[in-house]
Length: 73
Image 1 (cartoon, helix red, strand yellow):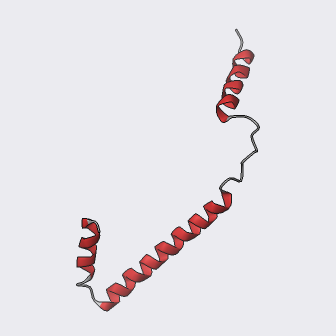
Image 2 (image 1 turned 120 degrees about the vertical axis):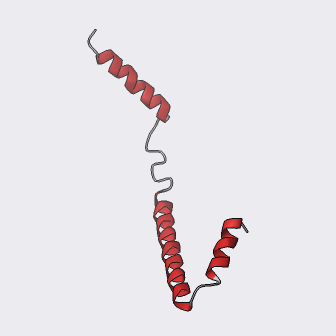
């Protein structure tokens, strides 16, 4: 347990029931929000796999070469 976590535990031990309930609701809200975000991100992991037929760096280098060719001398 970290020092910060221990401090929080020490502080909440002095709170009234209503305050504890408010904190608990906020903790649940944040956990639910984090789970939703992770769930959404999990849906997109790997979605672009195979989309590009070349390495990203190679693609950028090719674009730069093409741009250099099109510049007026």
